[in-house]
Length: 235
Ligand code: IMP
Ligand code: MG
Image 1 (cartoon, helix red, strand yellow):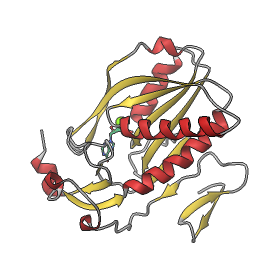
Image 2 (image 1 turned 135 degrees about the vertical axis):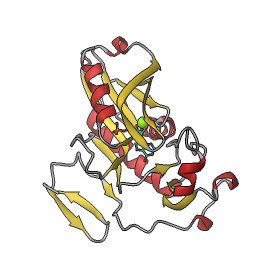
Image 3 (image 1 turned 45 degrees about the vertical axis):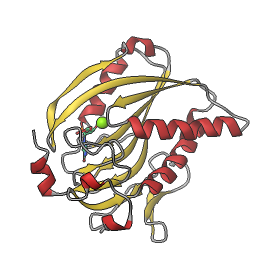
């Protein structure tokens, strides 16, 4: 990874000083995850999941740090946090709680307003080539604003590239993107968000608002969906 060195203690690539922006926590391809029995998982999903790959507590700890990085970079400006529904809603709520906590407890604070957009690109476990905007406010309200787009996961990058091009027509003052997850996949367009929570293997993940045909949003941990479940919830 250009501009980074591998830290064996932290299991992450650490950037050399000054290029802090793409700091991320990499979950390796051979990550075993955790047995479901070690954590609390809803009874109705016990048969559907292989492992817990990111426990809820770790998501929260990483989110707390993302909030700090965002305030460091965007602090002093009014931020419009734009939640990409539906998958982004849990991360959005938790991230904003951490930003609010920083606002309440430091000398520097950022006024925050919120906005929502609904996009859809997935059917079963496949990204379709069409990204549809199916709801939300007029993007024109974002003209001249500092916009922070909050997304759950970037896979091919097509959803984010589509949203960024729609948004640029409205001339916002600044646009930053934070995505909880980025998938390491050959299908990637090469697009990278400004802030990344975790880089994950090329698997279909559910939980913490990530869904499979609308199921599994009501699961706190990020888990690997098993093959049986892909059949069971197929549309
Ligand atoms: P992209 O356009 O290929 O980058 O896909 C991004 C969108 O696909 C995300 O916003 C998710 O809604 C969905 N997505 C991609 N991978 C997964 C996954 O592993 N689990 C659940 N949803 C996913
Ligand atoms: Mg999404």
